[in-house]
Structures are given as structure tokens and as C-alpha cells.
Image (cartoon, rainbow, N blue to C red; front, side):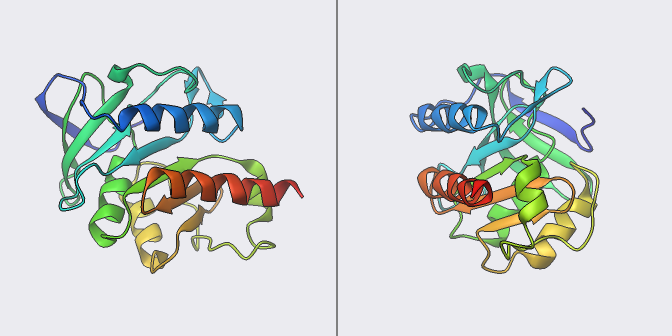
Length: 192
């Protein structure tokens, strides 16, 4: 998978935070529900949370992970900052951060009420988005791109669930529980 930024590592240790166990559980649930499907040997989607509410650092799943059903601590990266204009991500960990790290960073920066972002992929949600009156970006943009970040920010407002046209969804919450439950609820509505 292509990453459209350069990563500068501040250290090469996986992040340590007790809440990573909860993130692992949500990764497993998303895997079981088919919300992070496998594609070319990697698991699509990325999940993150902001451990400190006073800054925009966050812990996110690493890039090009295999199935998200049984992750170890080195599958997570702490992103400290993103230079949107120069496409540089400052992080710590042993792996590259998710290709959508800039998107997560800009959402956290724009919305102090959001402390968890779960990005998944589900063809059924994409298909039924308009029918369910879900907000959808105005056009398709390449994953990991600055253009995709712009499209999402254009419509972010106070939405907690956004569909990225022909791509996937973002479920936003004040914590991991609310972001995860929202995604599962929307997925459940699509199955009705």
C-alpha cells in the first residue's frame, strides 16, 4: 500500500498505554464483523485513540497489518504531529503508521470532542449510505492523500459518522466505546 507522507521517528519503541488493550479488542471486533477486511495480505482500515485530551497525539494501528484479530503491541504507533503541507508525520514505534495518519491527525486537531477514530471498510455501508441519510464526501479521493483529508474536513462539522465516497467510513467518538458502538450500530442498520 502506498503511503503519501514521510515518517520521522522520535524513537523505535512501541507505545505503552493501558488503553491499547481496549483498542486491540475493538480491532478484533471490527475484524469479526468484516469491517476491516483483508486485501492483498493486509487488513484494511485503521483505528486510533487520543490518550491525552489536551494535545493531538494519538495511537493508531500500523500500516500494512495482517488480520486485525490478534494484534501484538508492536502493531501500534504513536503519532505525535503531522506537517500537513510538507507531508511529514512524526511518530514513535517499530512500524510505519497507517496511511491515514494525516486524516486522523487533522480530525483530532479540528474536533477537541473526538478522542477515537475508527476507519473501516464495508461495501454495504457504502451502498446504503444515502438511503440511511449518512453524510458522504462529495467525491472519491485516493486513500492516504491530502485531497481525502480536505474532503473529510469540508464536511466534518459535528458529524460522528462519515462515509468517504467509494472508500470506507469514519466512526468518531468521545472515546473508543462510543466510536465502536456507533460503527456497529450503523453496520447493523445496513443489514436490516
